[in-house]
Length: 215
Image (cartoon, rainbow, N blue to C red):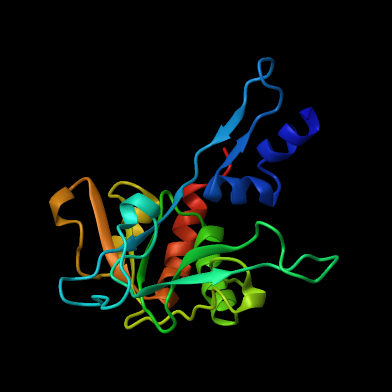
């Protein structure tokens, strides 16, 4: 357990970056050692669609009672399944169940928010999109039954990047000459809407290197 803790706290390997982004809850020895709890910097949430858009005409349910994280304003249906017993290949006793599923062809909007982004975090966004489009990453599990295949469709390749004004990243954002999107925090924060090429460009990457340069 001591070796495991040392590994996840070691800033010289990639585990440190991954756990910093996604978080970890690691109970080493209840009642004796302090648990290792690492809050994630990545937040993912569905975005409510404007009134009148995406209104479902079929089966509906109150997402707050079933799953508050489920996409809203989409058509859903109830599917009943009965798994097979691996030995007898007959219907498994007590296995009959029903579940709520997203109907085929539905669309929903996700918002990704990364606090204090690092170079590798921004690169993960590109890999994440590629793997979902290729079907390598699927939602909902049970992909062998045809569930969870999603394709990302983006009308605009835009990412909002914010930083404190007096930091290397804040100055790099200002030097791009993009329209300011943090007017309510003038003098404290600066922000701009960037395409992915600019986000991974030399100016932003160099600023992130300075921000997380080892002391």
